[in-house]
Image 1 (spheres, rainbow, N blue to C red):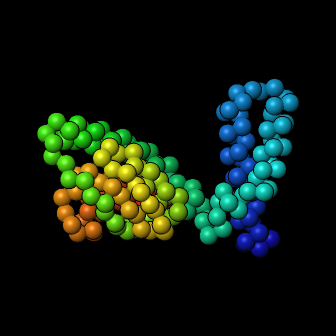
Image 2 (cartoon, helix red, strand yellow; image 1 turned 180 degrees about the horizontal axis):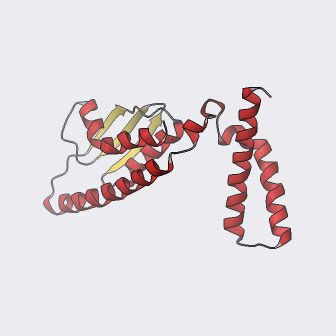
Length: 170
């Protein structure tokens, strides 16, 4: 079996497994009919959509499967950043010290999945909204902008999240 066929098969099985897991979560049923219908439906839908679920250029385990320990550390860092930025936003609301701007910057995260997680993490943090993610270019509305340099603004917005996220999906 060639390498591209093997990756196609792996992508199909990962897609099937994720769809079946979603089926099990939403149906919350362990009746035989439900289990069989979910399995057949998952395989059928995966056969049609596995190439969209995991793109062929992302079809390596390094770019799709996160490193578990690094992912846990990333989630803890994200939780910390959420709390800190929440208190910063609260203080800014009371003091009136805000400087909203649209900032453009690039990310060094190589994986499409990692880029998506970074853009969503930026949006989760209070005071920032990711407007657009196009390849490695992000456009973010940032309420605490204190620089006109896009590289410096990008480093402040993505901060430690990008550094750790690069280690999650290397």
